[in-house]
Every structure is written in structure tokens, then in C-alpha cells.
Amino acid sequence: MLENKTVLTGVKPTGTPHLGNYLGAIKPAVRLGHEAVAAGGKHYMFIADYHAINAEKNPVILNQKLREIACIYLASGLDPQKSYFYRQSDIPEIPEITTILYAYTPKGFMNKAHAYKAAVDKNREAGKPDDDGINMGLYTYPTLMAADILAYDSDIVPVGKDQVQHVEIARDIAGAINAHYGKELLRLPTYRFDENVAVVPGIDGRKMSKSYGNVIAPFSDDKEIKKAIFSIKTDSRPPEEPKDPEEILVYQIYKSIATPQQLQEMGDGLRQGKLGYGHIKNMLLDAVISEIREAREKYNYYMAHYGEVEELLAQGAAKARPAAQKTLQRLKDAVFGR
Image 1 (tube, rainbow, N blue to C red):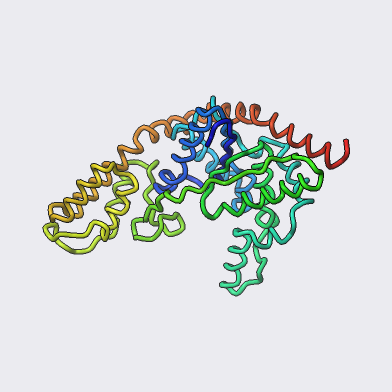
Image 2: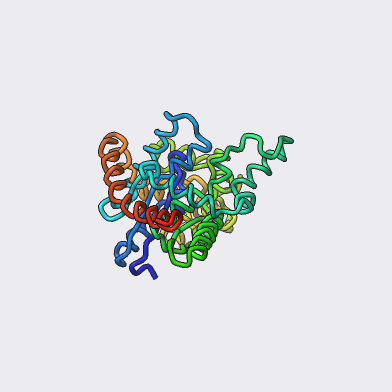
């Protein structure tokens, strides 16, 4: 399925990820990149800093978040010698391609985009005007994302459920341009959405999210990880009372990271009244630290030697630009009759 295919993944620099991000997005993205390259294809992995400025206007904070996410992907196994790893803002062809795409993007697409609709709904709930605080960057977000995708003749774009719409918009824009000029100027991308990616619960039982303040931060130190895990909600039942593992929040989080054998051990211990809450929290702590230890060591190294990361990003941009240049030239030749 990945043979000779081009896979593209983008990530907004939103700061250090929580455990759910790491297990459900970062590791799968890195793994898919490896698989694509092994199958004779290409893997483009970019940091979407243009997208990020819609929400973050402080350059110091933005740059810190960019550093963190770049180091985390490298620490998690991304191979910059095999993947095209770069910053979006280092590819000047992307804004030019976006400008051309605007002419073929119906305004109705933007009105229906999830990010814009969510912002409008939030304003209405707060009793504010629909467009209060909404900038054009947010409103036209899907067109810039389409440029990111179409610039590299992407075949497959792995996304979360809330991003499927953006790939469909990119496909619709590309189809409209191809139909107008009677030839394939842009490749039609497809999305890949993994239904089996687990949603990791937070320490309060809700979906793990920074906005809820209920996260386990795997790239923090052991003390902070332990503090978060031992804050997981439990009831007052004694250890010897048999319990249904599926009703225990610690067990639900453990499922996202444990081996089948480890999960069986915890499940049996709970059902048989042989494990208390302190014991299973320590089991989860051991599993998280074991999972993240090597990646965290690499992350700390890259953060301390960020000049090396800058060099890798610059090299990645230099390798990625020719494909975007070719796409831009094809579009200009068709649009301006050159």
C-alpha cells in the first residue's frame, strides 16, 4: 500500500506533548515514515510554524515550542537522513502556491472548516460577535494546508479525525484546478485515519488534554511523571476487594502502553483482589519511564545541542524545496500561460 508513495505529515509547534500525543500521534507518524521509505517512497515531515502564528504571537514562546517539537520528533526516531524534515517557513514557495490556490478555493469551503466553525461557536457561547478575535490566518487555514500537501505531490496524509476535512478540501481544490486546465497539474491526495488509535484518558478520567490540566508529560523528569500518575483518581475500596479492571482509570491508561503480558498481570491482580491502587500506579509509572527513557535522553541531548537541530532543519528544507519549486512552476506555467 505504501510502495513508491509519498507520505506527508505536518505538526504544529504547540509545546511539549503529553502521553496521549506521544503514543497516538508522534510514534505512529515516525513509524509510518520509516515504512514509506522502506517501501521505496518518500516521507515529508514539517513543522507548521505558519499555522502556529494564528494563535501564538509571541516569537520567544513560538520559537521555544518549535525547538521542543523538533527535538521530540528526532528523539522519537525520525531519521532526517531518510525523511525530509523541515520548517514550513523555510519553504518560500508555500505562500506563493497558497496564493494561487486561493483563486480556486470557494469561500464556502472556509465557512464550513472545522477550526473556523469552532471559533464562531465559542464566540456565540460567550455572547460575542461571530468573528470576534478570528484572523484571516485561521479563516483560510485549510488553503495553506492544501498548499503544504499539494506542493510535494503527496499520496497519503495521515491525520486525526478532525483533520480529514482538510485533506478533502485539498483534494477538491486540486481537482478543480486539474479540471479547469484539462491536465493533472496537482496530484490528488488521500488521507489515512487510523480508527484503532487509542484515546488515552487523562488523570481525571476525561480525554488527556493540556487544556484540562490532566496530562502525564513523558518528557518531564521522573518526579513530575510520578506526581501526575499518583494523582490519578481512584476510589476508597481496599486492595483485597475484587475489582473490574475496566472500571479502574489506572488500568485504562495502562492499556495504552503496557504489553499484553503486563496488562494481563494487572487485570488478574485487580480481579483477584491481589493488587492495591498504589501498586498499580507504580506499575504504570514503571511502564511510562521504561517507554520514554531512551527518547527522553535523546530529547535532552538535542535541546542542549540545538545548533545541530537547526542544521538538520536547514538541510531538510534544502532537500524539500526542489519539489515545491517544480509544483509552483507547473502552476505558474498553466495559470499565466507561460
